[in-house]
Length: 418
Image (cartoon, rainbow, N blue to C red; front, side):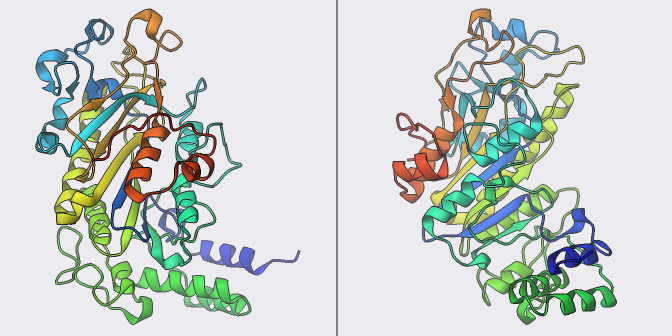
């Protein structure tokens, strides 16, 4: 059997480096672009229950459908506008709401319908297409955005973490790195890999860069001391060039989501313009009253950390937190909710027009539910994302509807941006 250089490299690296520790797997990604504004996309994996995070307490059917939780939603929620109220765990974000730097969009979804599979739903969310993509497509809407802009240098985009994301996959160059990667290959394995790659400059360069990233020695940079917030001590974003910025590693402990958010904010304070990362834990089939507050609190921590880290750049930042689908309007037998359809998305940042819930509310009467069990989506969440990109970066509607979100009809302006 004849082995190609690529296949031997992969097999060799597998001897000392697992997929989970690989520097080429990511839930956080950065991209430089010729704009002054910033965009952060947070993928809420598992299907966030928008009806619990943003509760339509003014809908007379809501209390009936969510009875049995032991939670008086109207009294224990944080009032937003008299009709909608937020989950109590959102309380720490109310200063952002009061400053009109936080808002929600309700009764939205991707075009995904019927099967309620996390895999298919997340694929469609990240691909930004209007049809199921399965394993055939590894091309995400953020990558297509980079293609439209014309990003040419792989060093202008990179990633942190473990989850592989379709949203940034595609032809536009970007790099991926896990901040806690450990490329523990033996000297013999590395020597073999370098020998095999010597005739392929592109792959040889990629191997060398991966090794240096894992060792913290990219281009001779010394890994700086990292403080408790995941920031390099005594360093400002962009000091000593982007290579030093890549070598800086946040601590990933029990509050790793905060460290990643601070690192994202630190990078966005420099040359990065786009960040995308994942937050797991939204699949609340059992005891949603216990599981959901943990995830909402983590999301709140992330937003607070981003604002603190970005400083004045927060005023030029838009954050979109989106999920693959909502959840059923009724609780199941284990006081959880099952996979649904319509749900909510969150938007934040000083560049956005917050302090409101945007929704064409469909109602929760039996006749108004999707398939008699789910919140009926009344708008495609991609349309809201597209209008934010349009207003934030100045892309044309034609580019957005044809290239970034192929087949999308953006409809009327959403007005999420100031």
